[in-house]
Length: 86
Image 1 (cartoon, helix red, strand yellow):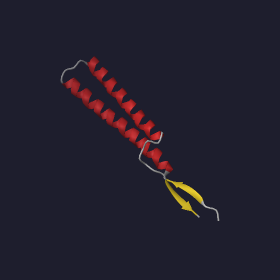
Image 2 (cartoon, one colour):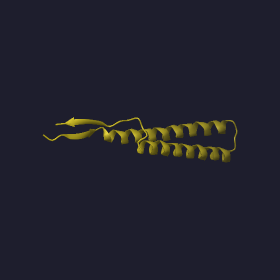
Image 3 (cartoon, one colour):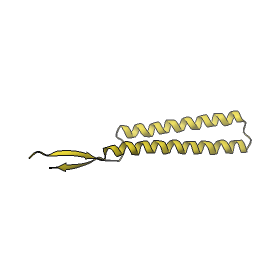
Image 4 (cartoon, one colour):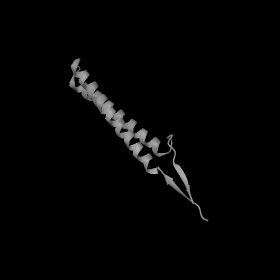
């Protein structure tokens, strides 16, 4: 009798990674909007508001890329479930 192993849940890791990246970017955009709005309310010049916005946006993109790359190389805590099929 030959035994085979099948992987269950391998596609979920990519979905979870993509969802975390999207949430990271959305959170960065919300932070960006709030800080830029606050900066205009306290009277910071529009040029500096743009600089602050570009820096926050860049940090958000770099953080999302780091989150995705760490998950891609297997540094996550998620495990693949393997069921034995007879």
